[in-house]
Figure 1: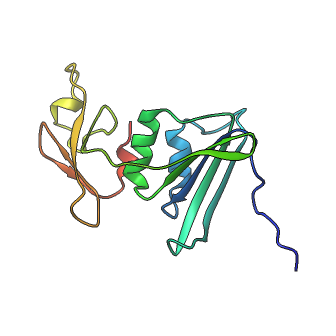
Figure 2: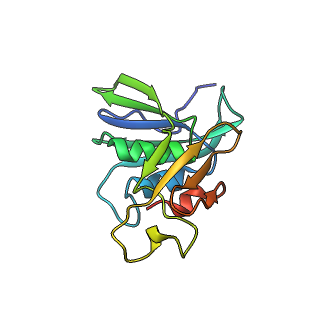
Length: 154
């Protein structure tokens, strides 16, 4: 039986692999790829993986990610790997690194938090990685976010 690829290789661009299952659409949202776009994008969801039961994969041609985009992806897919493809070959492969803190990336869930008012304050969160689930703690009001983090991304 002939083996066939679900998604064809890309010449240049980025492959985001080992995304938590069901998060590919949130990764596309982080990359600003929503609605109509000229970008050549491939996304597969809930495919088998050797490292995890299932995973999502996103391929974006002719684009390399910016550090703030990688930080956002780390929040919703802490096991993701970023592969930079040049001339059909992997030229760089990195795992995302969950930072100790983020600023201007997540909106606080507390509507009364100073970061949600008209004050010139940038949202800031510390990240607790000690448990199996990521927990974000607002440095201003100490409200925590541990579920549906993608919904709070700016």
